[in-house]
Image (cartoon, rainbow, N blue to C red; front, side, top):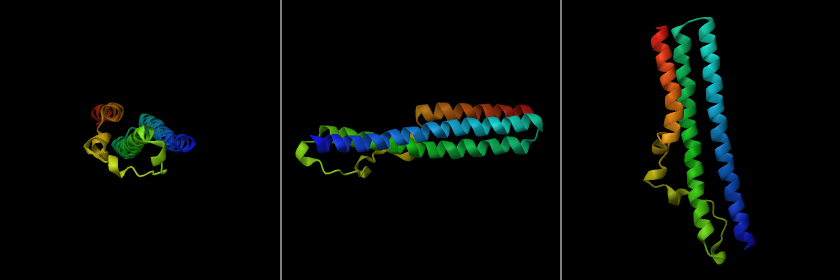
Length: 132
């Protein structure tokens, strides 16, 4: 039983790290976008507003990667949780869970990421329309 618990703890640590990375990316997105908008308020320029789109898309795509990795390790966790004690081999390979629901592009366009980054993107687009 100890080997199964250790394996689950290892997987859980990876899941927690991926969730933490995703959380940090969201914070950095808000920080960068707010800083660029503050810069835009001080010296209005379309160039600064166009620069707002770069961190939004970059962090959105990177966040999609971390959320995908988190989902893959959750699938691995569930598999190990149901495994017989004799079959615990400390395997960390998640490639067997790479199905259509866990594709990177699909995860990037999931409801949570689309709502968060899409909302920021819509705000930036509306600001671009107002400034331009």
